[in-house]
Length: 343
Length: 131
Ligand code: HEM
Ligand code: FES
Image (cartoon, rainbow over all chains, first blue to last red; front, side, top):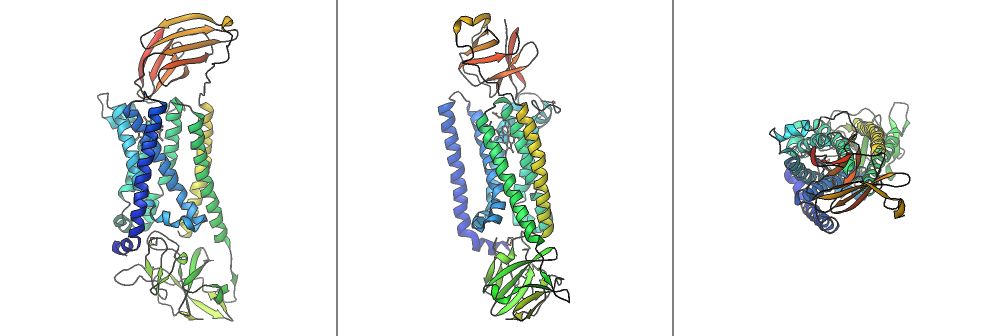
């Protein structure tokens, strides 16, 4: 599915969110600099820049990492999820300023290549208190660079969503590296219970939200529907699904969305081909199932995106028996036409 | 997300929680909060300056109290370095860190013959003072 479509759908909001991101970053930097000037007037400009951008990047990374589980737990956060990409790229830019200034300030004095110096100026890799923490920051920055530079839909398409998602899950590794960068670096010289407390609270917030939402999802995946004699699953009454909406069920291992529209029922795999958005949380717009994340569309009866687009998802057979919906747990090939059930 | 991806997320976060918690506990334990001992020798009579060194940037005194040695630093000029950490000259033990002009007091574990102030980020010596 092309970019134009997504742009049209989210353009207005995207611009608003981008403004919020830009304004928020400026505000943070301004407050940081004013506070530093008031509390610690001897700080040099370089140190101030390094600290302001480093802490800004960490703050943004925390926000990025809690958006996912938050929007799983409460759909009201979903609109922020759509714009997470720009937040990510902005975070990378803040981290880049921090990293570049650090390298200039701390590693360009010698006669070796400054990047080489990051790895070799301190070789105390076995020590906890004197660990070369810059290396951890450098590796994290490298990961963030790969993610930021492949964040465009062009790469999503060319790398295939699976590889792309795998690449972008490296953000978790980057997060671990950055946490250790801060704890082994900044905190070793400036042991302040306040900043350590904030980082620890941030860590607990992020991990607990991720674990809570993972447990919740596991529970949903574990729900079993009643099996009929022929192996089909009895899922719910036809009147339980609102018009132009869907209900989501776990069928085998996967989740399936059963949509009701124009007095008909159709079932497709719940996972959007774009970035895996939950199709069953979207609605029917102009006769198409519309993904709630970025607006990719699929025809309910065959799981295909309307031409000229070519996305296809798995479809499922349904039958109605005394007002109850039954689903065949074995899906068809992606894009297979299935006669909708009348209800 | 499909079922596989959900599972991967779950295991990644379980692993991250375990590994990072362990590492953070280890790191926080190893941190040196080194409380300054402003109040622990409030009565001046028992404080007995035993060593002194003077320098343009700072004056340094070691004071002996009833039960401890205390290092007093009076920093007179701004410190340019982003990280100024004080170490003992004898065993290169970390004593504490300087943030700018002002008076600092640190408790010492034993007598020392001098201090070194280092920029630990650049791994450079800033100042060395012997008594
Ligand atoms: C080339 C990569 C990097 C290098 C060489 C580097 C270097 C440094 C140095 C030298 C410090 C200590 C500065 C000071 O205390 O004055 C520091 C602190 C810090 N770094 Fe990095 N860093 C890198 C990447 C990153 C990344 C990617 C992040 C996060 C996204 C990050 C976040 C931080 C934070 C939050 C601090 C503590 C700031 C503070 O002292 O207030 N760094 N880094
Ligand atoms: S449109 Fe992006 S995930 Fe569905």
